[in-house]
Image (cartoon, rainbow, N blue to C red; front, side, top):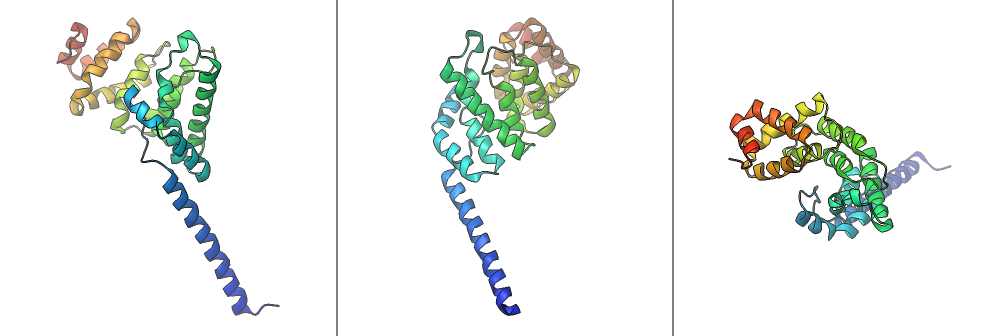
Length: 230
Protein backbone atom coordinates (compact mmCIF):
# COMPACT_ATOMS: atom_id res chain seq x y z
CA UNK A 1 0.00 0.00 0.00
CA UNK A 2 1.27 3.44 -0.95
CA UNK A 3 2.09 5.78 1.89
CA UNK A 4 -0.14 8.89 2.15
CA UNK A 5 2.59 11.26 0.87
CA UNK A 6 3.13 9.01 -2.15
CA UNK A 7 -0.59 8.87 -2.90
CA UNK A 8 -0.73 12.66 -2.65
CA UNK A 9 2.18 13.01 -5.06
CA UNK A 10 0.56 10.60 -7.50
CA UNK A 11 -2.71 12.51 -7.29
CA UNK A 12 -0.98 15.83 -7.91
CA UNK A 13 0.98 14.33 -10.80
CA UNK A 14 -2.24 13.06 -12.37
CA UNK A 15 -3.90 16.44 -11.92
CA UNK A 16 -0.88 18.13 -13.49
CA UNK A 17 -1.09 15.79 -16.45
CA UNK A 18 -4.77 16.58 -16.99
CA UNK A 19 -4.09 20.33 -16.81
CA UNK A 20 -1.19 19.98 -19.24
CA UNK A 21 -3.36 18.08 -21.73
CA UNK A 22 -6.05 20.72 -21.38
CA UNK A 23 -3.50 23.45 -22.06
CA UNK A 24 -2.22 21.67 -25.17
CA UNK A 25 -5.82 21.19 -26.40
CA UNK A 26 -6.61 24.89 -25.96
CA UNK A 27 -3.33 25.92 -27.59
CA UNK A 28 -3.81 23.70 -30.64
CA UNK A 29 -7.38 24.93 -31.09
CA UNK A 30 -6.20 28.53 -30.90
CA UNK A 31 -3.38 27.89 -33.39
CA UNK A 32 -5.69 26.18 -35.86
CA UNK A 33 -8.52 28.70 -35.64
CA UNK A 34 -8.35 31.64 -38.07
CA UNK A 35 -8.78 35.18 -36.86
CA UNK A 36 -12.34 35.72 -35.72
CA UNK A 37 -14.75 34.88 -38.54
CA UNK A 38 -17.82 37.02 -37.93
CA UNK A 39 -21.06 36.69 -39.85
CA UNK A 40 -20.34 38.31 -43.26
CA UNK A 41 -22.70 41.07 -44.38
CA UNK A 42 -22.07 40.84 -48.13
CA UNK A 43 -20.72 38.54 -50.82
CA UNK A 44 -17.19 39.98 -50.68
CA UNK A 45 -16.94 39.42 -46.94
CA UNK A 46 -18.36 35.92 -47.41
CA UNK A 47 -15.63 35.15 -49.95
CA UNK A 48 -12.98 36.27 -47.46
CA UNK A 49 -14.54 34.07 -44.76
CA UNK A 50 -14.66 31.10 -47.16
CA UNK A 51 -10.88 31.29 -47.56
CA UNK A 52 -10.59 30.31 -43.87
CA UNK A 53 -13.13 27.49 -44.05
CA UNK A 54 -10.67 24.59 -43.80
CA UNK A 55 -8.95 25.95 -40.68
CA UNK A 56 -12.26 26.96 -39.08
CA UNK A 57 -13.72 23.46 -39.50
CA UNK A 58 -10.52 21.78 -38.28
CA UNK A 59 -10.44 24.02 -35.21
CA UNK A 60 -14.09 23.26 -34.45
CA UNK A 61 -13.54 19.52 -34.68
CA UNK A 62 -10.52 19.76 -32.41
CA UNK A 63 -12.29 22.11 -30.02
CA UNK A 64 -15.13 19.57 -29.67
CA UNK A 65 -17.09 21.45 -26.99
CA UNK A 66 -16.33 25.04 -28.03
CA UNK A 67 -19.46 26.53 -29.54
CA UNK A 68 -17.63 29.67 -30.68
CA UNK A 69 -15.42 27.59 -32.99
CA UNK A 70 -18.43 25.82 -34.51
CA UNK A 71 -20.05 29.22 -35.06
CA UNK A 72 -16.95 30.37 -36.95
CA UNK A 73 -17.04 27.18 -39.02
CA UNK A 74 -20.67 27.90 -39.91
CA UNK A 75 -19.96 31.55 -40.78
CA UNK A 76 -17.15 30.47 -43.11
CA UNK A 77 -19.94 29.02 -45.29
CA UNK A 78 -21.86 32.32 -45.38
CA UNK A 79 -21.61 32.41 -49.17
CA UNK A 80 -24.51 29.95 -49.08
CA UNK A 81 -26.76 32.73 -47.78
CA UNK A 82 -26.79 34.23 -51.27
CA UNK A 83 -28.03 31.08 -53.01
CA UNK A 84 -31.44 31.40 -54.62
CA UNK A 85 -33.58 28.48 -53.37
CA UNK A 86 -36.37 29.50 -55.77
CA UNK A 87 -34.41 27.85 -58.56
CA UNK A 88 -33.67 24.76 -56.48
CA UNK A 89 -30.33 23.56 -55.14
CA UNK A 90 -28.21 20.93 -56.81
CA UNK A 91 -27.01 17.95 -54.79
CA UNK A 92 -23.64 19.52 -53.99
CA UNK A 93 -25.13 22.81 -52.81
CA UNK A 94 -27.78 21.02 -50.74
CA UNK A 95 -25.04 18.99 -49.04
CA UNK A 96 -23.08 22.18 -48.29
CA UNK A 97 -26.18 23.82 -46.83
CA UNK A 98 -26.83 20.79 -44.63
CA UNK A 99 -23.21 20.75 -43.40
CA UNK A 100 -23.34 24.46 -42.59
CA UNK A 101 -26.66 24.00 -40.79
CA UNK A 102 -25.15 21.16 -38.75
CA UNK A 103 -22.21 23.36 -37.69
CA UNK A 104 -24.55 26.19 -36.67
CA UNK A 105 -26.84 23.84 -34.74
CA UNK A 106 -23.83 22.33 -32.94
CA UNK A 107 -22.63 25.84 -32.08
CA UNK A 108 -26.01 26.65 -30.57
CA UNK A 109 -26.21 23.36 -28.68
CA UNK A 110 -22.90 24.28 -27.03
CA UNK A 111 -23.45 28.05 -26.78
CA UNK A 112 -27.18 28.85 -27.03
CA UNK A 113 -26.72 32.63 -26.66
CA UNK A 114 -24.78 33.07 -29.90
CA UNK A 115 -26.93 35.60 -31.79
CA UNK A 116 -24.85 35.40 -34.98
CA UNK A 117 -25.32 31.64 -35.23
CA UNK A 118 -29.07 32.09 -34.70
CA UNK A 119 -29.18 34.66 -37.48
CA UNK A 120 -27.12 32.39 -39.74
CA UNK A 121 -29.70 29.64 -39.29
CA UNK A 122 -32.50 32.11 -39.97
CA UNK A 123 -30.93 33.24 -43.24
CA UNK A 124 -29.69 29.85 -44.49
CA UNK A 125 -31.75 28.54 -47.42
CA UNK A 126 -33.47 25.17 -46.98
CA UNK A 127 -31.53 22.16 -48.25
CA UNK A 128 -34.72 20.78 -49.78
CA UNK A 129 -37.71 22.23 -51.58
CA UNK A 130 -39.64 22.35 -48.30
CA UNK A 131 -40.45 25.96 -47.32
CA UNK A 132 -38.47 27.16 -44.31
CA UNK A 133 -39.58 30.77 -43.89
CA UNK A 134 -41.64 30.18 -40.76
CA UNK A 135 -38.79 28.33 -39.04
CA UNK A 136 -36.41 31.01 -40.24
CA UNK A 137 -38.43 33.73 -38.54
CA UNK A 138 -38.45 31.72 -35.31
CA UNK A 139 -34.64 31.53 -35.45
CA UNK A 140 -34.53 35.25 -36.22
CA UNK A 141 -36.70 36.06 -33.23
CA UNK A 142 -34.48 33.95 -30.97
CA UNK A 143 -31.47 35.84 -32.37
CA UNK A 144 -33.08 39.03 -31.06
CA UNK A 145 -33.73 37.44 -27.67
CA UNK A 146 -30.18 36.14 -27.28
CA UNK A 147 -28.34 39.20 -28.62
CA UNK A 148 -30.75 42.16 -28.40
CA UNK A 149 -28.04 44.83 -28.30
CA UNK A 150 -25.63 43.48 -30.92
CA UNK A 151 -25.37 46.48 -33.26
CA UNK A 152 -23.44 44.46 -35.86
CA UNK A 153 -26.53 42.31 -36.44
CA UNK A 154 -28.97 45.22 -36.89
CA UNK A 155 -28.76 45.44 -40.67
CA UNK A 156 -28.76 41.70 -41.53
CA UNK A 157 -31.63 41.02 -39.14
CA UNK A 158 -33.83 43.65 -40.77
CA UNK A 159 -32.82 42.39 -44.22
CA UNK A 160 -33.77 38.83 -43.26
CA UNK A 161 -37.11 39.91 -41.86
CA UNK A 162 -37.99 41.97 -44.94
CA UNK A 163 -37.08 39.06 -47.22
CA UNK A 164 -39.56 36.80 -45.47
CA UNK A 165 -42.46 35.38 -47.42
CA UNK A 166 -44.61 34.88 -44.32
CA UNK A 167 -46.26 37.54 -42.16
CA UNK A 168 -44.05 39.35 -39.65
CA UNK A 169 -45.75 39.32 -36.26
CA UNK A 170 -45.97 42.30 -33.92
CA UNK A 171 -43.25 41.06 -31.56
CA UNK A 172 -40.75 40.72 -34.40
CA UNK A 173 -41.73 44.15 -35.69
CA UNK A 174 -40.85 45.65 -32.30
CA UNK A 175 -37.44 43.98 -32.45
CA UNK A 176 -36.95 45.33 -35.98
CA UNK A 177 -37.86 48.79 -34.75
CA UNK A 178 -35.02 48.71 -32.25
CA UNK A 179 -32.53 47.72 -34.96
CA UNK A 180 -33.85 50.40 -37.31
CA UNK A 181 -33.47 52.99 -34.57
CA UNK A 182 -29.85 51.86 -34.10
CA UNK A 183 -29.13 52.19 -37.82
CA UNK A 184 -30.73 55.61 -38.21
CA UNK A 185 -29.03 56.98 -35.10
CA UNK A 186 -25.58 55.41 -35.25
CA UNK A 187 -25.09 53.65 -38.60
CA UNK A 188 -26.15 56.17 -41.28
CA UNK A 189 -23.97 54.46 -43.88
CA UNK A 190 -26.37 51.50 -43.73
CA UNK A 191 -29.29 53.54 -45.05
CA UNK A 192 -28.69 52.56 -48.71
CA UNK A 193 -28.75 48.90 -47.65
CA UNK A 194 -32.09 49.51 -45.93
CA UNK A 195 -33.44 51.07 -49.12
CA UNK A 196 -32.27 48.08 -51.18
CA UNK A 197 -33.89 45.65 -48.74
CA UNK A 198 -37.08 47.71 -48.86
CA UNK A 199 -37.20 47.62 -52.66
CA UNK A 200 -36.71 43.84 -52.70
CA UNK A 201 -39.39 43.22 -50.05
CA UNK A 202 -43.00 42.28 -50.62
CA UNK A 203 -45.57 45.11 -50.55
CA UNK A 204 -46.73 43.88 -47.14
CA UNK A 205 -43.23 44.04 -45.68
CA UNK A 206 -42.56 47.39 -47.37
CA UNK A 207 -45.56 48.78 -45.52
CA UNK A 208 -44.19 47.44 -42.24
CA UNK A 209 -40.81 49.15 -42.74
CA UNK A 210 -42.56 52.40 -43.70
CA UNK A 211 -44.62 52.31 -40.50
CA UNK A 212 -41.61 51.53 -38.32
CA UNK A 213 -39.55 54.28 -39.93
CA UNK A 214 -42.40 56.78 -39.55
CA UNK A 215 -42.39 56.21 -35.78
CA UNK A 216 -38.64 56.80 -35.56
CA UNK A 217 -37.71 59.28 -38.30
CA UNK A 218 -40.51 60.63 -40.51
CA UNK A 219 -37.98 62.19 -42.89
CA UNK A 220 -36.35 58.81 -43.51
CA UNK A 221 -39.76 57.21 -43.94
CA UNK A 222 -40.57 59.77 -46.60
CA UNK A 223 -37.24 59.22 -48.32
CA UNK A 224 -37.90 55.47 -48.40
CA UNK A 225 -41.21 56.02 -50.13
CA UNK A 226 -39.55 58.48 -52.49
CA UNK A 227 -36.70 56.11 -53.30
CA UNK A 228 -33.63 58.02 -52.13
CA UNK A 229 -32.46 57.98 -48.50
CA UNK A 230 -31.42 61.30 -46.97
